[in-house]
Image (tube, rainbow, N blue to C red; front, side):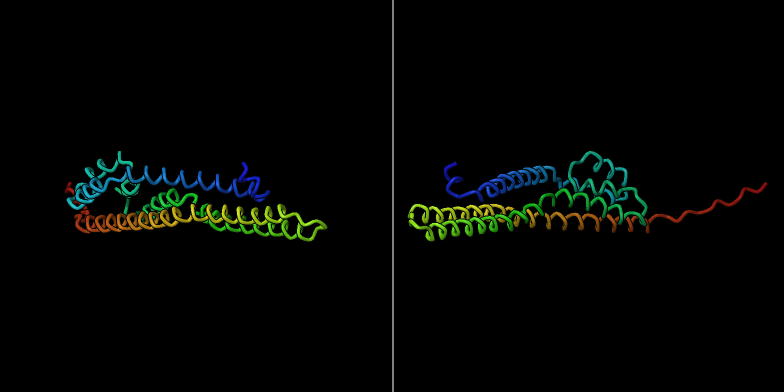
Length: 211
C-alpha cells in the first residue's frame, strides 16, 4: 500500500491492469497444460492406420471417446461425404483454434496499455514536481516525491508489460504449432478419404429378372 501511495493516483489503474494480467496469464497456463495432457499422438496414428487399412468402423471407435482436440476434429470428419469433408474439418479446427487463442487480444492490449499508463504516471509526477518548484516555497520533499511518483509508475507499467509479453509470445508459438497439427491431420484425413473413395467399387444396377 505504501508503494501504491507513493506511485500516485495512476497506480490504481496500473494495479487493476496487473491483476487482470495475472488472471489471464494464469488461465492460459492452466489451459495449455490441460491441452497437452489431452494430446494422444499414438491414438491419432492408430486412427490413420485404421483408415489406411480400410477399417472406418475401427477408426471411429478409436476416435469416439478421445479428449484430444485433433482427434475430435478427425472424429467430426469420419464418415462424411467428400464434398462436405473440407468444410466440416475447417469448422472443427476453427473452434479449437478459437479456444486456444482466447484472451490473446486482451494480453496484447495489456502489453500496450501498461507502459502507456506508466508514461502517464511519469508525466503527472513530473508535473507535480515542477508545480512544487514554481511555488513560493521550494519544498524538496514535494519535488523528490513527484520524481519518485514518476519513476514508480514507469517501473510498474514496464514490469506488467514484460510479465505479459513473455507468455504472450510463448502462447502465440503454441497456437501456431496447434494450427499446423490441425492442418496436417485434416490433410491426412482428406487424402485417406479420397484414396478410400477412389478404391471403392462403383455401384452396379442389377439386371431385371425375366418374368
